[in-house]
Image 1 (cartoon, rainbow, N blue to C red):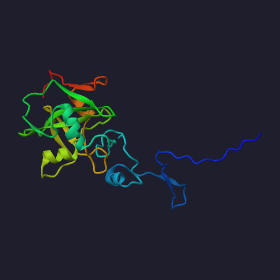
Image 2: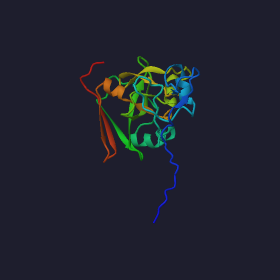
Image 3: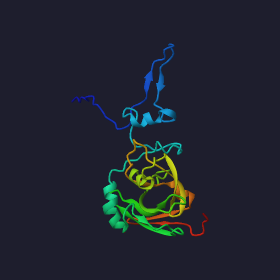
Image 4: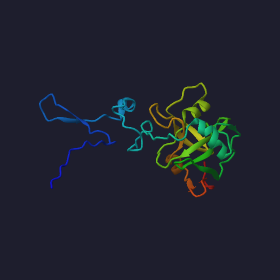
Length: 220
């Protein structure tokens, strides 16, 4: 008995290998890779043929290139379900803190079990503070504010790529998401803030609760 193996076409979600470009001098073909750095990085993000989707940044010093896919939480969810479960209205104005909270309680929300926290945010030395719901993301080396949160804080003023804010009285350089990102509708609490202030995050998946612990003996 004979068996025949017919060739099959396999499709992969992985990026295609770099193209080979002929050397006009007659030398061997060279590999041409799109550069995600320098003046071309915005083109790299906006061109669908070059941009392959959400990426981890290595080294972790290019916040304008960081991207993740967050399709289960948007502005409507933050204003409604998340605000209800947290017991505080998203982007609501609140009295300025005179000292940081030692603990902030949050929730584990949605089918992706994301940890969210209501944190008081303001510009340094400004009189207005707002409650902003952050998604804690241990995979993000940076802290970001959403477009809606930036509009709330900056008003009609232009929003820079990065800016200083205070989160629970703790200062951090935050970033605005780039135009091609997949998380411009959420606020990300990144590892930069957690490392800088020695924060501990406890997540209880059984009870869908989460807690941030701030060191009580830390000086500003």
